[in-house]
Image (spheres, rainbow, N blue to C red):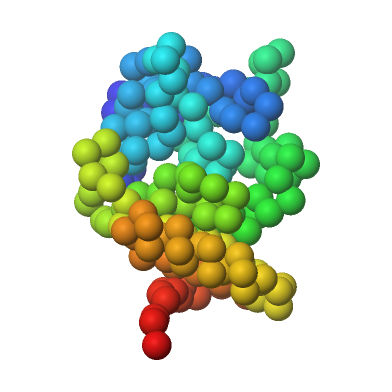
Length: 186
């Protein structure tokens, strides 16, 4: 049976995936392709497996589309998965909150290409397999210092990549404000 659920059509059965260190892997190519085509989640490896980043797996688990298990077949619920990944990445919750917010707004979100830039964000309706990201998004938490030199490097990285740098600032309530950052020459 197939149902229409938000932004895609999928089988009612959850897609099964296995957690391996800091990634989640879907081995079933047919189901992996379904997940990828209907939201551009993850990237395929050379073996045809879909590799999901932690925030992607969390989002799909929260939406009821993915079941994540360990190598012994024990299933993780959303909270357990957050705990598991938070041990490996202290900024996981901030990243996930930003990822969730951008996805909810209809953007396609892919992992960034450095530790400073968390995400590449594509325009609504884009196809990341054929188009390039328009934005680079860096998450910061309100009240926590950001080194100006790091910010300047991020702006320069974005300029070289011909992308717009966006700071996603999360406040204490978990609300996110987005700010475009550019450099000017005087």
